[in-house]
Amino acid sequence: APGAVTPSIVSQIFGSDSPLLTALAIGTLGAAIFVTVGVIYLTVVQYQDNQLLQTMGDPSSQAFQKMQEERMRLEMYEKNKSGQKRANSKAISELASMGDSKKPKMNIPNEPGNRDARRNAAKRRKSEEKQMQKKMMEDDAKAKNSKTDVKAKK
Image 1 (cartoon, helix red, strand yellow):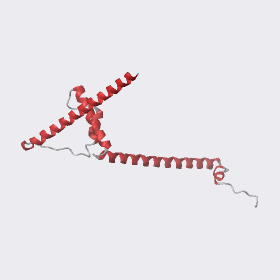
Image 2: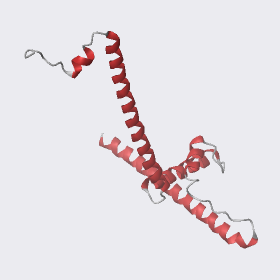
Image 3: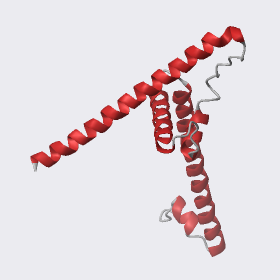
Image 4: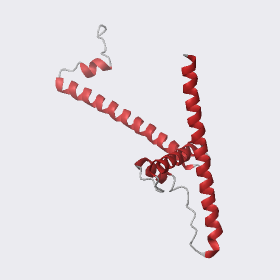
């Protein structure tokens, strides 16, 4: 027939005589879109997680250095606050356990021949703590100076 118009695909799906078929078609389309978006989301999250693990696993990366600095800062804060050698804070224990799987701990047996190695390790820890305290003091001083500068300008 020359006057017959071919219906479009959308009108074929939604313009059916059976409302049940129309509802099934809409439900199937919605489920397909939902699953596709879910797969894309999970792929993106997995990629971001892998990137984070790579940067945190590399001791030379900026993120790893920042995490170690924050860990030392929290340890110093806990030590100054409570006077205990071991910090019991949940945040510190989580930060402390983050790098343990990647970085092996130095095992120095308690033998007379290893006395120098243990002393050097203790000296190194103390010097790192002193540097961190000095940096914390400088940061506090900068913060106080910036606050006084803002007050003086008013």
